[in-house]
Image 1 (cartoon, rainbow, N blue to C red):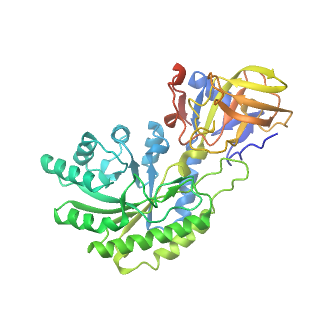
Image 2 (image 1 turned 30 degrees about the horizontal axis):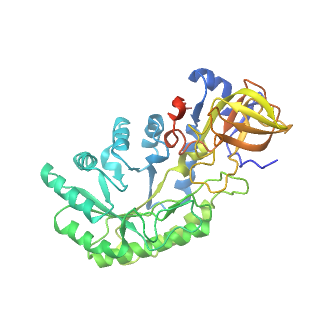
Image 3 (image 1 turned 30 degrees about the vertical axis):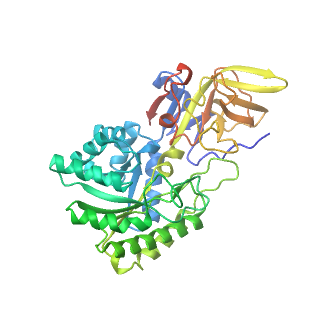
Length: 408
């Protein structure tokens, strides 16, 4: 058998069945009208935010990266929990506005912003994290035409990355941000033309579990912010320190030592250089806030044996859970945390492959995992489904369509 990833804390059995937010999976499926279904637990999200608030220095604000999960009820929940929102498209701007979020709490990063997106953001009062000098030119021209004072920050491409991160967002040639050595000149120009100067966005990587690596990168980020602020010749009003906190997906993964990260950052905040004394700081997190609070539920529609191997075929698959299938940036496929929700916590009785309903060999949710005996009609749960699931998967592949979603 191949090991399965670790099931996150906070999930229990109720009458022998997986409970999410204190409610049985089968009840939630019935309420939603069927499977496949993403269920997001509000209490687990609140607990994670509280843990972060307790561990991080009070001076460091908490931002939610909308790309992790833009489901409207999740955004509405987050509006009362976090200090700001980070978006990566005009579509996400429309989503946060529809959720009643004040655009003044929003910053907009991402390469390739279209003129219409820049215009919408400037008109709404969103902070733009500029990704190039050309984008700065376009933003300033649009603001002049609108008669608006744009709120402008610079996304910095640092000369380092976050070691051990799943996706490296900085260091070397990157489509993201402006190379650090060119940042001061652009900052001086933004200030000189009368735009509202909003500081730096420095994001080095994501999905890191090594606290030491995160601590080291945060220290490098603060050093870089201080140096660039000095070279820019102006106080730094705000600095987004990025995020990068990962969650355990695979066998052998362990959670980030949040207490160690918070303590180290607190020490650095007490020793800031003069140029950063008045700077407001934030950490931008998405996956870490919502990833473990989500479960993907699908139903077994067939049980079959091929050349001695058992296949549990479900009505779900990679069209909703691309990452769990191993097709979202993973080099070597490993099993996510997967369980038979209908017999949650029961003893392992058989080895089975859990697959989806798509006509492709890529559609795998678990390879040779150990499970209690499962039958047609039973529910399968894929954990760590709260981030980069529904909105990051090809829902229309083979005409399957999107999954249902609900917040409990």
